[in-house]
Length: 296
Image (cartoon, rainbow, N blue to C red; front, side, top):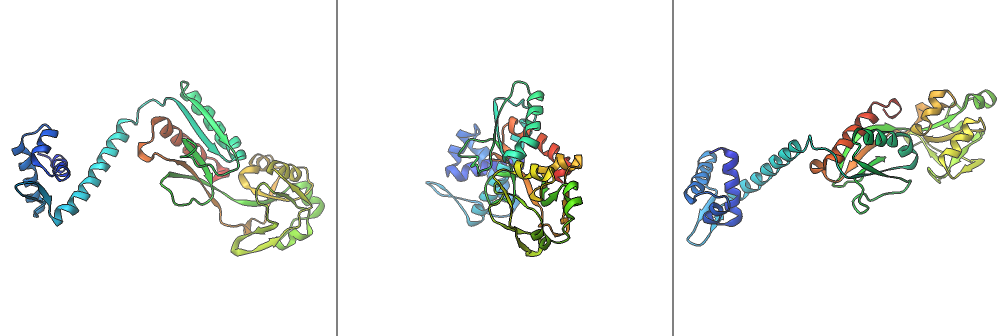
């Protein structure tokens, strides 16, 4: 008898505290159950069970081995379930959440391509700038920017983003380029209150600069647009100005003073037991986001 089957039998005997009940539940003979446990004890070199006239109890060594066996058997079951479902076809509706602008710019194209590949699938997006409890709100997948709190969610890192100060070539021709964060006090600032309400901008090495913004915008898009038009400087996450950077409409400055980048993760609650629709989307989104130069 193979060791895996013998471990299964031992765990069942320990749980039922009965050789007879184990034999009945596993459709085996009582002598076969006894031989399986005895072979394990011979292999390990320790007594695992003590049989009395009324019940079966584990020894101290048996208790430790029982916990290890349960963990090993659970890992085997997880591996078999993952392998068995790896080619299953995604079905149903997939719900995805991300911050508003990131979701529209980078997650939505993945969602539409996913629906093209799996035409029987449907999708719902929740792109919103507020914390979303994906378990309580029934969300399948979340894309999060920032350091994650401890949780039981499965997390896949797919990139990083930076907080950057930027302006247009037109602005720099007219007003010059700040050389240090302290120089920002002499420049026009368009601040996005959607990103952070504090007038204090933090940089690397715990450097902090109080910025007196002449223009306060309640959306990132408005602050970015004012910078693109050459009115002033703004500070946003670098992915938010990706198209403008590529087009040469904006330039990043003071990059040597930036804070460490923020991680981007894809989260989902089921771990290795995730349904095919989740696994397929996570694999696809991870590959797409990782190959994006603006996010890595």
